[in-house]
Image 1 (cartoon, rainbow, N blue to C red):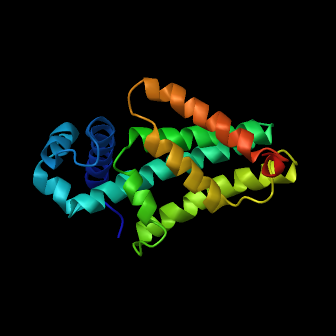
Image 2 (cartoon, rainbow, N blue to C red):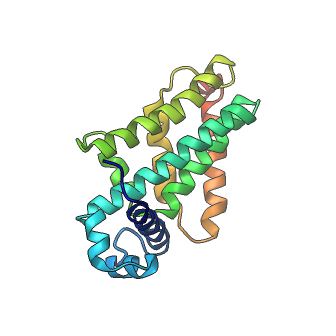
Length: 190
């Protein structure tokens, strides 16, 4: 049964408010604050998201959809496969850096049985896998790495970058290091 228009608007406002609150305060952001930011009562929040974990999963999934959309955009608009992969990795690291606390969910999605998390995992693998395969086929990225390796490397970089502005420089540096390590011939360098 389709969701009523007002219920859909409430869902979207709650999700946007939660995304903002988690970016500011981490995964422990106050649910009352999120409801207040969304302009809804706590009961409306809980009707859409019965638990904090349901809300965090939805925020996480929404961010992953945005990363998928970025991969689609890069595939269509960035002719350089290496640059496209680097740009996507930077967006992935930024996601982990800004949405601190949600990165713990990423560690668990490989084993998480929830359909939303399985969908998030599949979107992530498709996004990085498509960009990685394109770069490998172009001969600009080594072929002995797979999407899961790259997601784990990006996850490591994203979790050690601070959410403060100085973390931007570190994130950029990590992307350069990752891309250097992904270069053809990098596996044989000491």
